[in-house]
Length: 491
Image (cartoon, rainbow, N blue to C red; front, side):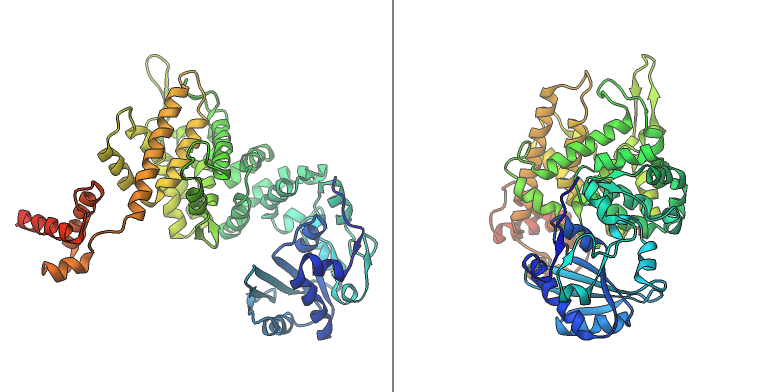
């Protein structure tokens, strides 16, 4: 249970969130119509958080209100949904980006509008005029016909109505996120309805599932959320390629079935993402920075890496065989896992960049293990780096998490230590390459050696780069002489 505040005052809001503390009186001064603050901001504020996004509903023209706010704070205003007449204002400050959504009141009253919302904890509202003018007592002065305040204080996730999931099936996935993000328990009827209406998620456009899914993948402990997908029956509809991995037996290198191993891999990955200092102490800071890079719609690499971990063994159900001794094998399962990932990216309609990332990371997650040995040479290290490319860091993390989750009787601590040592060598060489500027570029070859523009330039530069990384070339002159020898040898 959560202890929530018993009052809501503009002065208190201003201390916690000066931007909103100045916005609310300004909205009240516009006198364009009734304006209500609703939904997630109130929920999170009551829990002691200050969200970046704020939702408003109004009896006025939402576009007019949004344009006034955008002008006042020098923000960008635009239509978010023409059919629903929702307008968004994005305001960038030195400290943070704020997103404000303005929508018309659905139905004849604010109470009817709240009835159309997903969960009771998101169906609370306060009138801006009243909040700007007086201190409100909670929960008495909230507009809260569905008792969201009570549910939030008791840690309960409850649908607003029996038709909540029927009105918008994407709420089935959203429920998982809210439950784990806020530490809530399902109300019994809500859980029963999730199981009953699980098949409806197949009717939701892929883009909308992606939004909910990626919002979930930002946070750690995703293994618990995905375990619940299977328990609620949603797994076969959201990730049908993974259904056959549940209970699928593995060989003696593993102590768990494929699905349970996948969930443990996610746990180990979250541990590495939280701080890679245990396995990779020299590179923990760079790994953290790397994983925060955006891949699609401001979503970081870490979110997509979690999705890759979920699918890294998806192909095992299609490749399981037994030899004459009865030992289980999954030959080429990474290629079949790639096929499953490709189907997923099409279903979710991911961007080309995100799709390529998932395909490469899943398809290459065995490459380090297959190439690594006790006496792996520096040339082999460079070959692995060249093969893994920009996904090297991601594959290192995924494959290490995979190894950490492999605890069968044939797995030994010595093998794990050796694997981590190889990964550290890969990271060292990879960032050495990243940090070491090339000695020459294509224009140098064209100007100094009078070479024509074309694919041959790129091939020569690769050879020069390899020689530089091996330490054979130290200067631009060295590189040009080496390139000239390549040209002469080719002739």
